Amino acid sequence: MDTINKEHKHCVIMGDVNIETHLKTSDYLDNLFKNGFLPTITKPTRITSTSATLIDHIYRNNMTTAGKSRIIRTDLADHFGTFYISQAQKTKHLPNLLKTTRMFSDANFFNLKNI
Image (cartoon, rainbow, N blue to C red; front, side, top):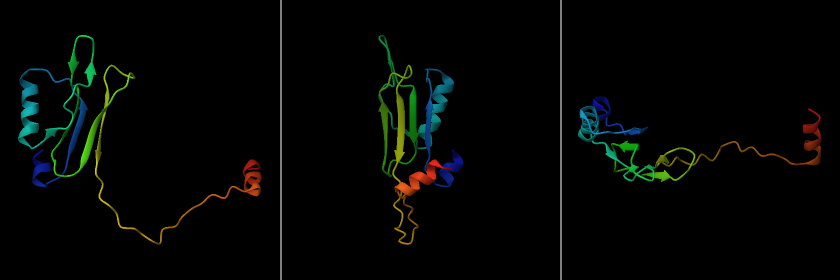
């Protein structure tokens, strides 16, 4: 994290992390917050009939750039999915790009069948 901060890198930390209340967890969270990482998922990602916990974490250290994180409600696992989308920088239009097209003609279908 020191290198990330010294080089002013944008960083996202994601994981299925079962955070419990004990010293190593406190150290982990303190280190994240000390280095400017903030959570982007703040609602429970595992819900049962008796509990609701946030176990799928996404932290990022740059809140000035556009980005979105969301929770995906699904029954594929015992907890929901999460994702983060970073806003990509726009690229310049390159007018001389080669464009490929596919010709759907009878002759091409015939040639494809006879390969």
